[in-house]
View (cartoon, rainbow, N blue to C red):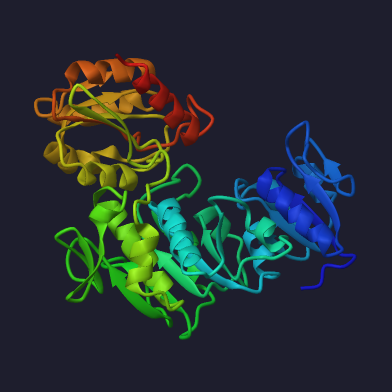
Amino acid sequence: MNLRNKHIIILGAGRSGQAAAALALREGAVVSVHDMASEIIGFSDEVQLVTNAKVETGRKSSCDLLVLSPGIDGETDFVRAYQENAGELIGEVELASRFYQGRIVAITGTNGKTTTTELVQRILSHSGTSCLACGNYGIPFSEIVMLDEPPVSVALEVSSFQLETITSFHPDVVIWLNFSADHMDRYPTLAAYKNAKLRVFKNLTENNRIIVRAGEDIGTQLADITTFSTEGNADYTLDSGWISQGDQKIIDLAETGLRGLHNAENAMAAYAACLSFGIDAQTASEALDKCAPPLHRCELVRTLDGVEYINDSKATNLHALDSALRSQGRPIVLIAGGKQKGLDYSELLPRLQQTTKTVIVFGEIADQLEITFSVIADQLPTIKVGDLEDAVFQARQVAKHGDTILFSPGTSSFDMFTGYEQRGDCFRQIVNQQN
């Protein structure tokens, strides 16, 4: 792709926008960054900055290439105005992929992407294959491309938002972990959300490989398919705490720091993807030895008075919450709630009845959760509180020796926090202050 002397407009001044601008400048483009904010910082003096951008700004603009940041919905009048006089619309991941010469493992799904991305990087790096995690997790793909010596492979976490704007993006291996309702505040239908994710397969051929959880409907694909599951038949399964390939036990999860069935599946998917690089089971086992899950994903904060406190703040949708519930082996006192995203929590009632003794709800969605869970109030007492500190206090009053207090909100955090990281840090701080 030749960008020399081409005019590029980047919509969105966040980190991916900054990375895209830097890459475009390196390739000789004339770069403008437009954002609705009243102030834009973090860019080279060579970049023209346009603040307070709106629909009229877009209509008056023209460019050879329009690069859209993933946080901006491409179906808005704002973006359409810019498209009127743009040669092509792509995203930062698409832009970076056109200049990257190495192999790409793309990881997508509703949940487990970050853990699996870390595991792929860990296994490949341990084997001597240089690999960095990037994309929706870690650093923007464009920053990887701009390194003096880019790695020969990347573990690239890709969200539906990023996949909306790909055209020629062609990973070597795709991991599809799972699919369930999420981001229904952005997508008009569940089908629209899934179709955005399915774009990850758009350019695959029979020379590529797909790693997919058994039972997931991904349509007809040309690439070779490998399946994994802790529930039922698959190429990779769980047998007495071991990840097994057929009848062969290959990775002992007890030797890792990975807790729960969901992390077993993440490890299966990561190993299966790395197998296409020639990585053997012994090398993968060594790479996963004593590894710990990422912060905020079923993270054991502490055990106090015989009660485990688990920080699962990264659970921003129902599938993640369900995975956390089924991964615990002790009675659960659940703390849930946050931003209203249009999700139907009644889907969780059967799982809650099996695993949970009390639910503490808070945040913007607290009233809805209280009403939803009231249908089984005799089996699942629900306590509504005003903030996270009160939620931990109430949970501690209810929990008994041998229980787990699970902080797994099931929705995003933006009603009260800047993100799931701040929310999880707050939970950890409150828990560690308990005497």
